[in-house]
Amino acid sequence: MVERKAPGLAARPNRARIDGIPRADGILGLGARRLAMRAFVAILKRKAPLDEVFDALLVAHPLPVRDAALAKAILAVSFRRLGTIRAALLAHLSKGMPKDEHLTAILTTGAAQILFLDTPKHSAVDLAVRLAKADPKTAHAAGLVNAVLRKCALADADDVPFLDAPAWLAERWKATYGAERAERIATAHRQSAAIDLSLKDTSPASLARWAEQLGGVVLPTGSLRLTDKVPVTELDGYAQGEWWVQDAAAALPVKLLKPQPGEHIADLCAAPGGKTAQIAAAGAKVVALDRSGERLQRLRENMARLGLPVETVMADVLDFTVPPFDAVLLDAPCSATGTLRRHPEGAWIKSVETIATLAEMQRRCLNRAASLVKPGGRLVYCTCSLEREEGEDQAEAFLARHSDFIRDPVSPEETGLGKAVTTAGDLRTLPYQLAEWPGGGKATPGLDGFFAARFRRR
Image (cartoon, rainbow, N blue to C red):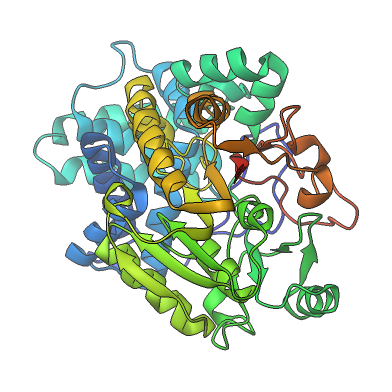
C-alpha cells in the first residue's frame, strides 16, 4: 500500500494500486475497511496506541495478510491527515461531524482512501456505504455517507500543514520553534517515515557493502536508510542478525554515550532494544531494564536474533537499585510528539495534561538514573519528544538539582548533523532535518524528533 499526497502536491514515488485484495465477507476489501473503522473508534475511545489496538483487533477478527496491510494503511493515513480529512468532510456536513463515533469513523476512513490513497474512488464510496448499512446504528445514514464521500471525491484537499496537528500542539510548536520551523515540522509529520537500519559492524566498509546489497544510502549520522519500503524480514542479513531497524535519530543517544568494551552499562526503559543492541555490539556489558514483561520478552527475542549477550531485568526504574554503572542511558517515557510520522495517532490521543504528567515522571526517573552512575561516569537522558518540558527544561532542572553532575556538551561531529546541536550543547533533532544530503537519491527524507543531553558525574 502506497500513500500519496493530496491533489496539487508532488506525487510520491512508486505508487501502487490496491486492486486484488483477497475477499472478506464475500465482498472485495470490506473486511479491511471494517477493521480500520473499528480500530479508529477504539484508538480514540481508549486513547491507546495504534499498533496495540490494531493487533488486538486483528487477533479477534483475523484477515488475510494483504487485507490486514490495507486496513493498517487506511488507519495510519486517517490519523496522519485527520485535520485535513475533517475539514474536507465538514465542507459537506451542514450539521457538523456526526455524534455517532462509528459513523464518524466510516466517513473518516472513507475520505482517507479517496483523498490520500490510491483507492478507486467508486470502490471507497461503495464500501463505506456498505459498512454503514451493515450496522443498525448507522444504516439510516447510508445516504449521507454516499453523498458526502462522492462530493469529497470531486474536491481537492487543502494544503495547510497545521490542519493535521491539533491546535494545542501546533501552537506549542510555534511558541517553541517559531512559525516557520513549526510549519516545517507539521509538514514533515504528514509523511510516513523511512526505514533506517543500524548495523552490528559500523565500519565504513561494512556500511558501504550493506548499502549496496540492500539498496540503501548511508546517512551522515551513520545509519543506513533503505530507498524502498519492503518487508525487512525478507532482506539479506535479517535472519543472520547483521542489523536491526532503528530510526537514525534514535541511534544517536548511544553514540553520545560512547560505550566501551568491558564497561558495565544500564539501559533503562530499554524495550524494544535498539539502543540495547548498540551498547552490546560495542562490547559493553549491558543490563536492559523495562517494567513491561511483554516488551522485555520482545527485547530478548531481538537480542537472540542478533546474537548479542544482554542481561535483562523486569522492574520499574524508580525501584531499581544496584551497584553504580560506568554509564547509564535513560530513554524516558514521553509524549512521543517527535515520532508522529510513525505513530500519527499520538497527536490525537494526548494533551497538555499528558505532557505535564510525563514530565514529572521523567524528573523522578532522572533522579533515580543519576544515583546509578559511579563517580566520573556518564549519563545520557533522551526522549522522542519535541516538547521543552520533556527535553531542554528537564536538562536544566536536572543540573540545578544535582551539583555533582556537569553537562558534557555534544559536538556537531558526534552526530553528523551540525544543526541538531543546541547552543547549550544538547542534541535536538527535528523531523524535517535530513531533507537533503549528498547521495540521498530517492530515499525518503526526515527523521524522528529527539532530544538528548549528556552529563558526567564529578
